[in-house]
Length: 119
Image (cartoon, rainbow, N blue to C red):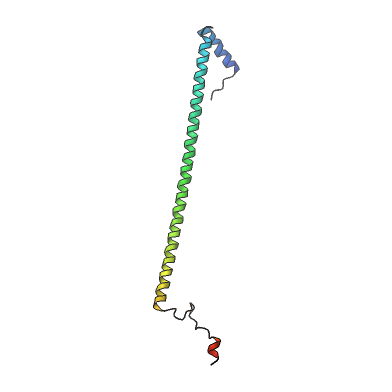
């Protein structure tokens, strides 16, 4: 903020001693110290509020990004579920039509059993 060194403080004290006088200088110095303390506390408070606001803004952005990713995943899950339902419906329709009546998915004839060959 301000860079006030020893010589600047000495100059301010000398001018204050001449202008204000030695009787009221301690009271004015105390009052000035209180004001400086209040200003510092206010600046610290404002700084912490700004940091909190920036952090909350960052968290809002992260949350929005997470929500977008979740929406994308929900769409993928919905599409996959729809495809699975379509496949199940197709399988049920083909089963009800009797396309798989032999009991084999690849359509080959049923293998002969040993009892069939003994005739």
